[in-house]
Amino acid sequence: MYHLDFRSDRSMDLVGIGRLCIDLNADQFNRPMEETTSFTKYVGGSPANIAIGAARLGLKSGFIGKVSDDQMGRFIQQYLKENNLDVSGLSLDDTGAVTGLAFTEIKSPEECSILMYRDNVADLKLDTSNVSEEYIRQTKALLISGTALAASPSREAVFLALDYAKKHGVVVFFDLDYRAYTWNNEQETAIYYNLIAEKCDVIIGTREEFDMMEQFESFRQDDHQTAQKWFHYAAEIVVIKHGEAGSIAYTKEGKSERSGIFKTKVLKTFGAGDAYASSFIYGLMNGWELNRAMEFGSASASIVISKHSCSEAMPTVEEIQTFLKTSRKE
Ligand SMILES: Nc1ncnc2c1ncn2[C@@H]1O[C@H](COP(=O)(O)OP(=O)(O)O)[C@@H](O)[C@H]1O
Ligand SMILES: O=C(O)C[C@@H](O)[C@H](O)C(=O)COP(=O)(O)O
Image 1 (cartoon, protein in one colour):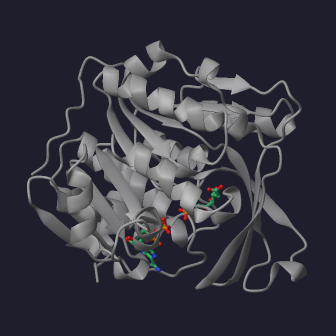
Image 2: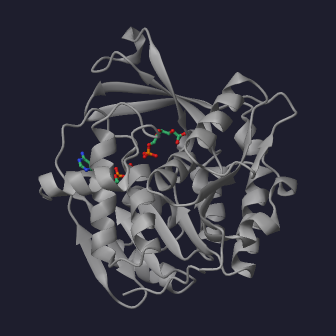
């Protein structure tokens, strides 16, 4: 099957590190944002969505991140507390930085985009002094999200968190989460992504994100070649997501599983990956077979893309189980 050693003597299950932002999702959808007159505010940020999803599933979830010293930063902290996440790993920015805003445009269920306002954001001011070895030592798993590598000092904070995780036998998940607007260029992104991926136990990304990472290879790799590449390093599991075409996962032990999707009435497509990741991680942490964890992730993704938000829409175990009873995978 696969070998992931989630240590039972840890007080936390999953700690995320990286972006905490605000999603402002258009209230008037199926039209361009130019015609939108109001938005609904949710906590966002891919790693935050995944950590919230994990907490919604009952995992003891925490977060290492920096929030702005204003109403938005306090909204984020309050929401995480209300959703049973441990917030002792959060730090408050004192430089006047702001909270990143993700305006979402829902032109149609298939045509969604995100307009990011991320100048001088607090999340990228996370620094090594905000990363506690003791905090990381107490978790079973660490979730790294690629965008946290986009700028210093956040970049160095993530590398330090990864070193602490490896030192203390913490299983490391790397969700690639590539957002081009946050980076100077793809070459720089690939350099830092590769340095992190080489030490991670589970790597989750879309085909396009792996292509970006593997751009220095002499040829474009297929899914199997991608997985084999990372098995030469620390990876035990590599998951390649293919949107409506589902996902495929490979294990270092030579197993591979494909998962289809659950057709649903799609309101917006973003949030799929975060929902998939949180529920897939939940399955692995419960020792499930790969295909069962992937199915759980796919079901969670379908639930979230049928709703207006990402974080707020993250389902409970019961909601996913009910969904699975009434749905058929395609
Ligand atoms: N239109 C859809 N209908 C149902 N499930 C979907 C749809 N799009 C994505 N998913 C599910 O969500 C997973 C992640 O979506 P994907 O778009 O590949 O990643 P990301 O959201 O990170 O870009 C897919 O592997 C699939 O299981
Ligand atoms: O990650 C962000 O900064 C924006 C997210 O908060 C937003 O909900 C989103 O884009 C999630 O989509 P996904 O990462 O593709 O699942």
